[in-house]
Image (cartoon, rainbow, N blue to C red; front, side, top):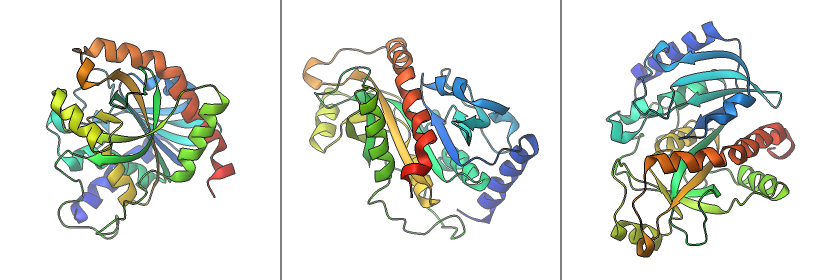
Length: 279
C-alpha cells in the first residue's frame, strides 16, 4: 500500500462526489441474490462500476456492478451492487478498493452480506447467520506489502473484527421479527470449486459454521481503515459431509432470493436504529 493507492482512492472518490451529493455514513456490500435492499433505498445516484476510475467490471452474472447512493431509514448510505472475488483473478487491492473508497466518502459503518454453505448441523437452508468471527483460509491477505499509515496501522488488531454492539442489535432485531439468525464463524476459501467432504470435515473441526468465497478480504481492509463492521450470511445449502449432495448455482440463487426479505429487514432496521445503540 503506497501513495499511488491513496491517489487511486481519491480519484475514485472525487468522481463519485461529482455524481452525487450524498455523504454516506453506511456502506453496504450486497452478496449473491441479496440485492433487494436496493429497492428500499431512496436512490439519489446509481453509478456503474465501469464509470468509476480504477473499479474493475464484475464478471459474476448475479452481481450487477454498480454503486447506489441515497438514503435508507433516513440515513445516507452507499450500497455496492456486486463485488470482486479472488477466483476471478482480481488482485486483493482491486477486490478491496471499493471499501477504501467508501471510507474516503465518509462511511463509518460497513455492512457485508453473502451467500454461504452451512457447516453447523443445527443450521437450516435459508437461515441468516450473523457473523461473529471469521477464519481466513484464502492463503492471502490484502494488507501484505508496504503499509500506508494514512490508510491504517501496520498491525491492525483483529480480536473483534465484527462489532459486538452491531451483532447484539442484529440478534435483537431477528428475535423481534421471528427470524432464525444464529451467531456463527464464517470461513473464507478462494474457490471457485466447492469443497470436498474432507475439507468440510476439517472446516467444522476448526470451528467454522459456514463457508464462502468472499467477505474476509473486505472486512480486513474495513478494520484496517477503522470502520465498524457487521456481517450476515444467507445459508443457501447445507455442507454436511456425511449427507453431501451436489449443489447447483440455480438452487443457491433460489434460496438466497427467498431469504432476501429477511436480510433486507435486518439491515434496514439496523441502520434505522444505529444511533440508539452504537455509542
